[in-house]
Structures are given as structure tokens and as C-alpha cells.
Length: 82
Image (cartoon, rainbow, N blue to C red; front, side):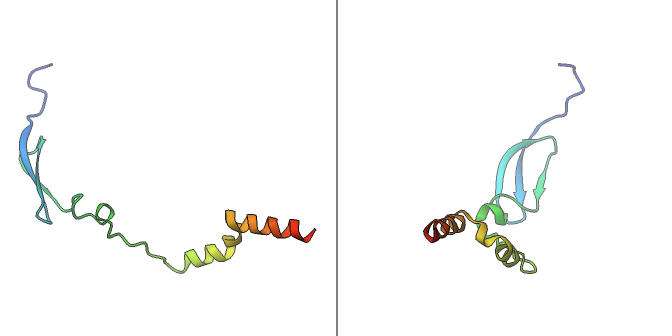
């Protein structure tokens, strides 16, 4: 390794805005984060899926019959009609 070209690593305590702290190593002497895995909605399970402008309803109206169960039902009705 060449001398003098590598950054110094510090043992730091990372702090999140929610108050959670943990120890890690970084090239910066301090780490202050806005969001972490303890408070992020994706990791906590509090994330809500938002249906904007009725997109799910439009999709189901357009392609709802094309589900696997719908196709099997339609195929069974066709074979029963013969």
C-alpha cells in the first residue's frame, strides 16, 4: 500500500434523527442521518400503498378477467357448453 493516499478511518457512533445510534467505521468523524432502518416505513412495515387516480380499479376492469383463475373458469365454461 502506498503511504499517505488512503483516508483515515474513524470509529464513529452513527445517530439517526429518530434517536437510534449504532457504532460503525467511517472516513468522516461524525455521522448524523435523517432516516435509518428503524424508522424507515419500508423496513418497519408501516408503508401504505396509495392508489392514485383509481389505477388499480382501471387495471382490474381492463385485465381482471385475464387472471389465472378467470381463464380457467372461462375455459371450463367453454368446454361445458360443447
